[in-house]
Image (cartoon, one colour):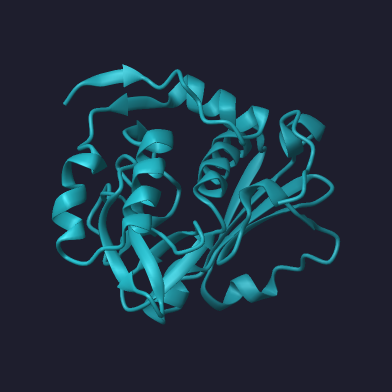
Amino acid sequence: MNLNLFDDVPDGLTCRARSFVQAHGVRVDVRHVEEHRQWWLERDIPAAVIDRMAAYEKRWGGLVLPPASQYDGGPRYLEADSPEGSASEGWWFEAGMQRAAVPYAFAIGPSGEFDIHSGQWVPLHATIEGWVESLALTHHASMWAKQITKVTGNDVDGIVLDEFEPVREVMGLADTWWRGADSLVAIYKGEAEDLSSLGRTALIYSGLDEWGLRGGVKDRAS
């Protein structure tokens, strides 16, 4: 498998995420969606779904990033494959092969959501960009926090976020980030919703100054 620098960073990311991808991302060779278009069409996959897969591949295909802190690291690399769905429910496709043995797949949903799927589809972020932003923010917060506290299970419900604001660039759905006066809180509920377990986890990054809280990035509407 050939490795190359990922120097063509997609637009739509914050400066922090762009720097993260430029510094830590590499590109590997992946299969081209167009090579399989006819095979999928013959199996009643709509052309519009294949077009979405091709657009995803062009924008993100082959991107390898450092492991995520949850979901056993997330996808090994980003690649469109395995469309699944129906006209009534919408169509998903695989977002990239798992990095480790986890009981779910990573997928892109009908409206572009970044999902996990096992017994059901659970959107983690509203877009793949949100997932990349969350990885960049994890990397940034881990470097600058004076203390990192892990909270699990029912104790996650006890975290008080009244004085916090959502970090909008991660476009959180099941997984969200929150910014306080001197701390960032990442809450991960995707596994709990997908597997009907108590797999909720929160990471609290505390002791942050203004740079640590934002990394030079101001909030923007999602």
